View (cartoon, rainbow, N blue to C red):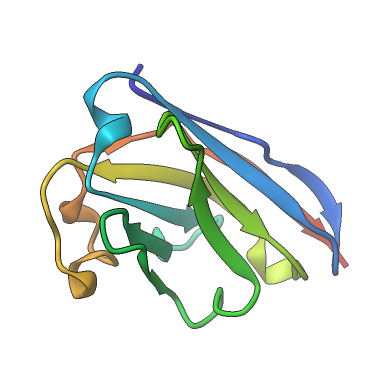
Length: 126
């Protein structure tokens, strides 16, 4: 296993969670990382991504102003900080890493990524 997502759980609407994505080996040094989510009965959707060299993020509209992506200085763990959570944020969240050099507009495309974590469930109650 090269990416391991964790930190999901049950939270009330308006609350916060921080998801972690621990990487080992090459994926943790990827040029870009992304977070996706999949709600029951729905397609997987992009949440946010970032290119590490430039630090430039790309967030889905539903995440802007509420979610942010960061990583540890040793570049082995990546985070998705989620604030002001809403019931519609309920989903399984996946982290992914790209070892290529995608442009910013490519970050929402799942095929951009080479490695995926196994997913962690976030449930937001109303």
